[in-house]
Image 1: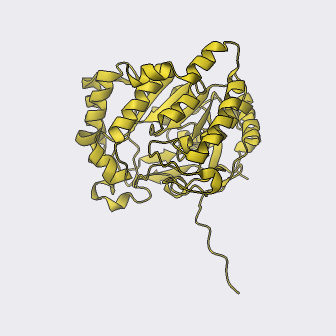
Image 2 (image 1 turned 60 degrees about the horizontal axis):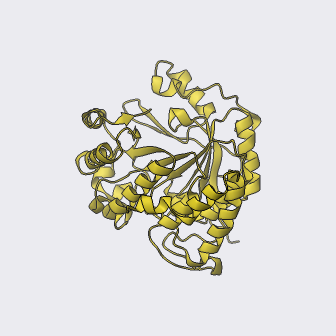
Image 3 (image 1 turned 90 degrees about the horizontal axis):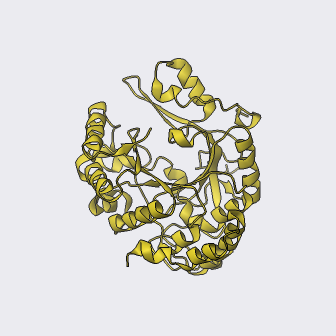
Length: 297
Length: 68
């Protein structure tokens, strides 16, 4: 039995199946409480730290029990089918990507303002009433703040189209709690091999974890895979990502981002000291065509 | 008198809007966290650029989207 098949028979799945009339918000409230309790032995991301965040311990993400956010606004820079989106960015992340465009906030879970799910839901609803099509929860990485994210879902209308923007480094436990909560998973597939992931984001076992998450997301929700093209990483990162997607998730929506800029600590790496050049972009797009990927704008 | 340390967090929280741009020597503009307001502004600079005009939506600019 595959991991995905196992999870399809998970208690959360059975619970939802046994209660066909239960609303998303009701289930989210229940899950939020479970997610909060899980902070006592936090294994929400694949680092599997097991620290007690409720008692003030910190794992590799350095996040406490109360999340903060550094941005909440209507944006139009995401996939065309998702915009305008009301994007809520929670502070802190379990990865340490040197090129992170929001490094100051993503590497610091204490950045920004304290997050109140009810207040944020009100703001999100206002944005929806004024024309936003979706509500996007992102970071940093929202998985490390799963209790608050689920509290937000519980406070939102069941009809709202919700997007989970993730680095796809969550654990099986997090996925189980997220099952059925978000309409779209917008997931990054950043690196095509473990060596680049280790060097640029200090992350072990990246490929195994991200593939596991993507396969699960595709089986449980709508999935859009994002790849940020990095200078000098077409052959080592983009090519294997494209190849794997073609083989394992044929037809999945892929958004190829070419707007890399050398943010945060990118200059620690020679090849990341510049932006992505147009000829490189053409080559990357040609590769996508070669693998018959379903590119979306 | 001791001055308080400068805030490291450059992003205001609350309801202030933030978009970030990188203007390249060749004239390209890279944008991050693009709001409808700034997308409109960029589209005004270059109405022939489909990448940006496709992001200018009919989304109205409510008061919370205007700079404080």
